[in-house]
Amino acid sequence: MRVSVEVRSFLGPGDDSSLADDVLDGLTRPFKELPPKHFYDDIGAQLFDRICELPEYYPTRTERLILAEHSSDIAALTRAAELVELGSGTAAKTRLLLSALADAGTLRRYVPVDVTEGVIRATGAILATEYPGLDVHGIVGDFERHLGHLGPSAGPRIVAMLGGTIGNFTPGARRRFLRDVGRLLGPDGALLIGVDLVKDPARIEAAYNDAAGVTAQFNRNVLQVVNRELRADFEPDEFDHVAFFDRDHEWIEMRLRARRRMTVHVADLALTVTFAMREELRTEISAKFTPRRLAADFAASRLEPIELFTDPDGLFGLALARPVATPRFGAAHRRVSAAAA
Ligand code: AVJ
Image 1 (cartoon, rainbow, N blue to C red):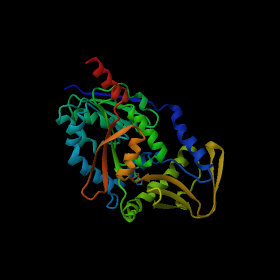
Image 2: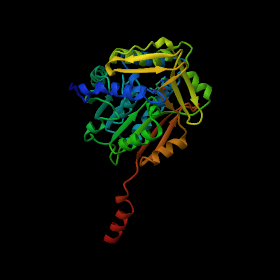
Image 3: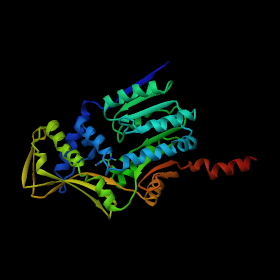
Image 4: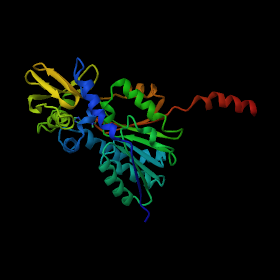
């Protein structure tokens, strides 16, 4: 049986500077901030896996339900030969989609994109044996910077971003990202995005303030990452976990609040910053969506919605969209062919 797994890495030695650059920027701003991508070192990835199993954290299991229910519809609507998955991780949910595309007889290639090389290699090898004949082309990289390396598709392409990860983008950056991905789809391609839906704020806030305190550990872990990678002297236990639903922006704000006045040194950056008592450092936004917001984002990104699959309680959604047909072949094309007739 032919097993084909190819992995290309675009994270070079200079790439670990992205943490240094982000810390330098983030800790010298008036409102201190660190991007959420730095949560996911090995400990952070393990903590996130635990979060996904928490009773309060509904997104993962709800998305899995929707995929189980609608993967065959998605396969029928897209007839995709290539599945590109952004932030693929262990591809736990992806199998539902891969199986539906394989059953539809269209699947040829799986392209996992993730920053963690080990996960891509391990998952790629397993999937290549589980789906005989499937080509696995792993891309070790950052989906905000390395999608240009995708290259031509093996037929109709579906790009999937599951898990609600799209929620981490600020609104403008989200539209820029959607436009960039839209350009990679081709005329017969599609985009599939997992979106957490706006609902009772108490239900949302509970998902980020779990009783077991795993999210608080996950949140504080970013300070451990900075300590280890940049020789800083943060005391993570001197920061309180804060997560609340911002009703104006309809997103979760996750922050770390200083329990007392403190000075932090980041040796590798020769940087010293002070935190006032109760000063907050933002570590993540997690935007929640309405069909209206999604439609506006798609319209601003030259994408048109095909379908929004949700669970019966309307907790989570899988939004399927395609590129807006290029006008050049629209009215103009009809006029020319009419004149030629
Ligand atoms: C992986 C970004 C979708 O925002 O729900 C979980 C990360 N942060 N608990 C989310 C997260 C706190 C998660 N995403």
